[in-house]
Length: 412
Ligand SMILES: C[S@@+](CC[C@H](N)C(=O)[O-])C[C@H]1O[C@@H](n2cnc3c(N)ncnc32)[C@H](O)[C@@H]1O
Image (cartoon, rainbow, N blue to C red; front, side, top):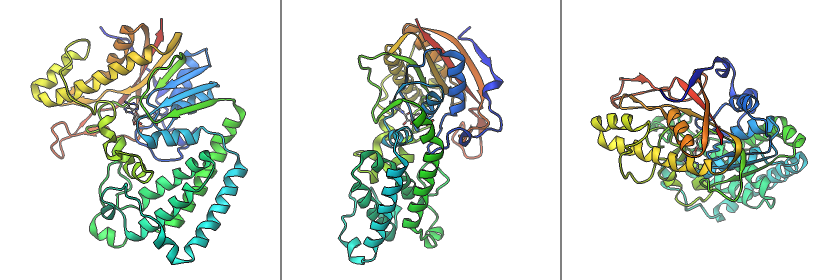
């Protein structure tokens, strides 16, 4: 029993990389392949009006929607860095304006740096926790200088654009180990030899970001009349119905799966976002643990977990409870016959494999929608941990996520 799942090899995209279609302007964890969105939209949707992504992250679903000719797209993400990346990728800015600002910016910064007293007079940010633990004094001085000049850019879209390379520079010039999504400090011996050229890194990243934007995003944005709106908040239904929902929700709470908030902490702090360290607590499944879910498809699985670890069962229930509430809102915001597409991973907790794809189909069915099909695809191409330690004992690992599920429903 359950909702039908078909193994669909077409959606594996063996050997293809994200960068092929829409290169990312900024690193982000657990991104969705835009190819999936493009092909699934082509297969299932005729209406090409409005598209909603309630968990938009770095905006892959907008890349898919743009490729398929949607005219209006709206996205939500509680993580301000995610909203910033999505917004910048899908906002039209003229090449002239960008390169002119780049030139003036460069001249201003180099003039400013000629006199050491200038830096001394700048106010250091107060919003960064443990600043000396994560950044050298010289790095703080240079980041403060760059931020000072970005804040003075008058045009809001260009200012946001400059924050993208700034954000990458913040991370690269901090004492974090750069190839990890969570915040781990470098070893002390590495810190001794770590002396990044912050201004150089920033300008290199700025040029690269402009190149990618101008070569990959701008031509497509210029050809289309699409309007993309992105909100740094959770999805709240307005008096508006969408033709299509395309999204990849988190597959578990941030603490035990992907720590989107932690990954984004420095940027959010440097950009002055309040409570930047608490974002993971407000993302799906991060809130209060109230009770164990006892009905529906997921109940038996949660009961199994509760026999091994009651507290974990409460955490897992909190996640599904949030997902259920969100599905109710999303379902109510879709036009009749509109398609709803969720791309999701099924995670294992305490050796119990949780059928999130089935849960999603069930909740949409309970909220006025019909499940059409679920495709199973291999994620061997995706940069994500697919092994974890079932007992939290180092060395004892098991494969958790080898497949991803594309759940397709239709509003009745
Ligand atoms: C799997 S990621 C989306 C990735 C995206 N498709 C991409 O390609 O970048 C899930 C996103 O959901 C966001 N998120 C988690 N809980 C949320 C909530 N309650 N409301 C809005 N966004 C949330 C996270 O910040 C994260 O960016």
